[in-house]
Length: 319
Image 1 (tube, rainbow, N blue to C red):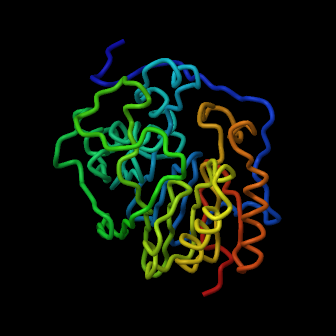
Image 2: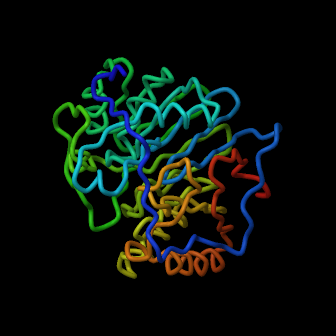
């Protein structure tokens, strides 16, 4: 089989460790979107989210390859063409307007250049993300470098970037300073800049928070109805950091609904149902108790999104 430069073809490898507890809330999952929805969002595990307003489509943090735990620990990783193509078919995606990376760790940006090339999309992100694109061979005109507070028009969607932070401790800190050509060690995918990504269609907006960290005041003045909130290893953060995260992300934008993301085992292939991170890595029930208490106190609707199902994230919200 011919192999494109920087493209790794492999059979999916998944690890499902014991001691896991899926996130639950008192509220049921959102129903599937109907044909009258102005905007749909489809969650695909980690922080991968397809947003579609019927005219324009963008994909945030595409992560389909999901190399297994052993490969991540001791081997080299890169985008898996066969798996990515299968996932795009399952999503019904052949063309995209943009692929956005909230930061440059492998589970957010590794697959992004391949998806951009496959769908003709613009690759959007930080300097580190553009280095991943260059290493993959994307032309400069197919990449857009963004800075905090930048707003980018993607067809009929407006995408605004706010400064954010990765949850502590930050593995693989720093910038990617030269073109990165896979397969490489997982540590080569350094975090780069972190962004909160707001996607607006008309008067409606969703916020994609790629990691459970925050920057004080960064989201002030950026009202958003629905937040897709990363909760990965939030249970390991200090109590003060958890409080700050809720205040600086959910309260700051005036969110009325929160859908939790980045809770699933990212070493498990998407050919299997999503399963949570093992309890030795992350205490998801503790995080959900924290979120449920704050959601009840603030009148926020807390939900767990259903994977692979297009939903109207605003359904049931009045006004």
